[in-house]
Image 1: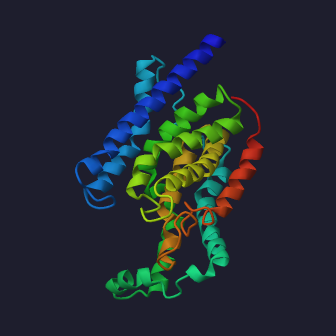
Image 2 (image 1 turned 90 degrees about the horizontal axis):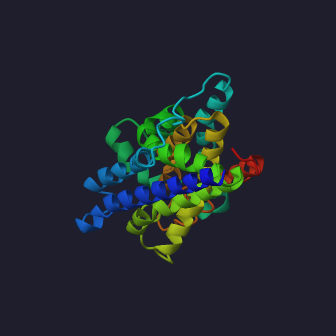
Image 3 (image 1 turned 45 degrees about the vertical axis):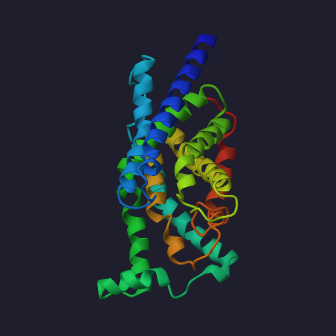
Amino acid sequence: MEQDRTMVKKRLIWFVTLTFAITWLIFGQIPLRGLTYGTGATIYIVMAGMFVPTLGNLLTRLITKEGFANMMLGPNFKGHIKDYLLIFFGPTALLLLSVAVYFLIMPGVLDLQLTALQEPAARTGVLSAQTLLLVMVLQVMIIGPIINIIPTLGEELGWRAYLLPKLRLLLSDRWALVVTGIIWGLWHAPVIAMGHNYGTTYTGYPWLGILMMVVFCVWLGIIEGYAAIKLNSVIPAAMIHSSINAGAGLAVLMAKTGSNPLLGPAITGLIGGLPFIVVALILLKKAGDNRA
């Protein structure tokens, strides 16, 4: 038994080391090449980094001769249709609730004129800013869970299909979910320092941004991880992740400039993500101290 635990720890070390080293090498190309984050080639560089956790999974399996069983790629639809309906529509509902909660708490930040959408709406020639926002919400609701599923699978095949199951062999489910989120959040550190999600002008840059990203990844990781454990599949986690990526910026489009990104309006902020945090705490309690 102790020998098995030693091998699990060895595989965890290999996975985390490979995933961080390769990803950070890729992300590092942005400052090394003098590129401006969020523009041009940097979008493709960051997207390439999203597939490295899957690469870490595969390389670790090869290096440690683990084989390729239990990849968690089967969707396991049978008996879980209601779960999948919740997974399909639930994140969007929480996103919209998060928008409402944030602007109820911070009403002065709400831009009723939707200034950020005025120009894009004018370019359509037929849509008002309000109608364009409605179209975007419907898009997130209908195709959000699948539109980004390829790159989100690139991450989730590492975090929820490899890291989380391995940690569950060493820790309780509750702690495995939390530790997975912490590691996932720290993995983002280089791009957070470049301005991802929070920019570069907030007080405490970049350390508070990195800390806030860890907090965000812990609560989102709990939700995604709980779904992956319950359905024994990585697909639900990738769907949730896809929905979040598709709709996370909705609140930003409705806000005046100058808001504190560490608080919101995006769900990556402490206030912006409140409904998700509540759900994560409920699921964390339900996860309990069970082990795989």
